[in-house]
Image 1: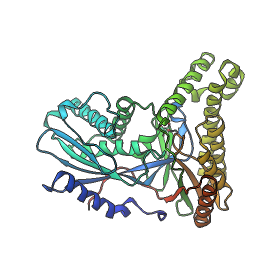
Image 2: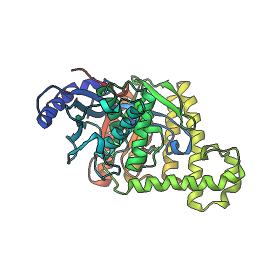
Image 3: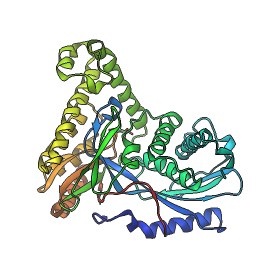
Image 4: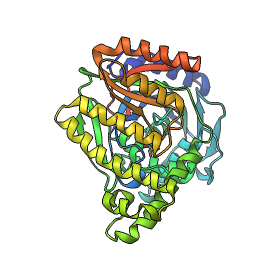
Length: 405
Ligand code: GLA
């Protein structure tokens, strides 16, 4: 189990090993530059980003390691310590379609950054690059390993190529790569949470207009625990896209009665209630979750601002129940973790984080309650599923950056 708090620089030893692995992969002509890009947990606003609602994520001190070095030629070579398969192509001939492999993410980002450099008229002078990816963030666990790799790649290429692009442009390059090249219909939350992270804060992000503010979260008084079910669903991407389509379908019907609405978040609850029978029952449950979650997330912001962590935690637990019963993205393993967690003394609240369908629960608890909480969670999960979940305590992070060794 990891220790609480701390900065990603506590991974310096691992980063050093990553630099050595780079030399083994690509040769020792000169040392690589090293970058760290965090993952994120979302505490409130489940499945709201693509409905234009507010979300409350925070970056964690686990993430992607990127070792990168320019090449004399125009080739882009990509390897990973965590995945099989090498990618290598000239910058001129990067593929136009995804391959269904891990490197789709950085390739998609490289295409976007090249486009931006073409717009600035500097593309012809760019060198190739060799990049080794790695890190210590669970993949496919709802901690946004994909935004971590995408925003991290954008930042690394921007530095390597000396482009000096604005952070918001890098975040949007990462988002386009994931949406258009990799093909996930994700909202803006993950790349914003990673790209605009501030240590010791949650990001309040209103996904309707991308306005944001940082709200302090006292990580000395409170601990953020992440409990991983170990469940990974092959079909998760399809089910996620299906939820996006169902919310869009709800909005298509409701907007006729609400001309000023530009997204599902805008539909007033009373209007939804009065039109509920126009919607197919499944679609109505999805909309019901979204509209109540919008209200819960605004309430949670006020609770946090007035320092009422127990109320904030109770709101998280209500969000989980809605994700389970109305949005139907939980699994028994997640429900077990949340149930055990909220029954523990010193736990403020718990819910699934990320898209769901497996992955992790996030738990907010008093720092002093950690040991008893972790033991109880593990014991009860083990008794029901015959194996232990991974439970860890995460510190915050300040976003993607170059790390000098
Ligand atoms: C995934 C997506 C996010 C968001 C969450 C659910 O993590 O990538 O954009 O929709 O699910 O809140």
